[in-house]
Image (tube, rainbow, N blue to C red; front, top):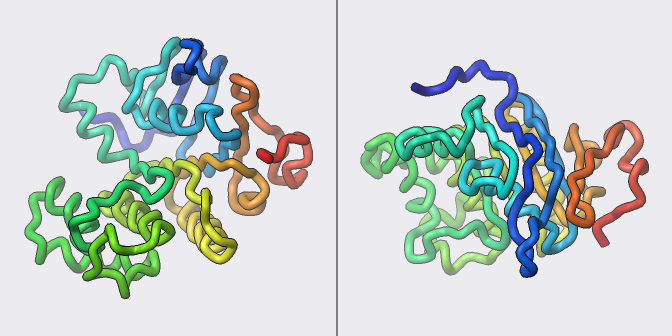
Length: 245
């Protein structure tokens, strides 16, 4: 049975240990975290700190090494395959470093594909919605280009458009500013700030500073531990000396 869309806590990790280090130990321990409807979380951490693993668990794709993960009020480990498919449509994910497009397909086809698959639409039925998403993400001029032929920065936006196609209730973005020039970074921060007015967001980042003024809740993965940063918005992130350098 599908969960109520009115649930206030969308994602909850309780006593969770996340990922596995080369030595076999968890990458992050002691994660007690709630993502409520309307939140805009920014989670900082150095390379290898476990940011990607955290999002994979939060999306219900991986199970925590210890502890419990609930998504839309359901323990992810207890879901059957059909329930997992339904749940994954409600959680959008944008990957780091190019967002994994289908390189042989056009930019437009990359966005129409999930619409056709999940809604049983034809390409012609899906195209108006897809083109609107390309317009919103600044990809209109690339619509007929092969996804593999556009620069990585634009592939990252393509991943965003594709994730938004199914109108998820929560969107998880893995280090979306990594490797981007300042103009592209500014676009992402501004776009996601506006998007957060109607969609719950979780962003991971190597650096917290670019998200000041956009994010509403902040945390960091620091030396294998989860740490919430209290008062980050009002204090300009100064409560913590860590800067992800």
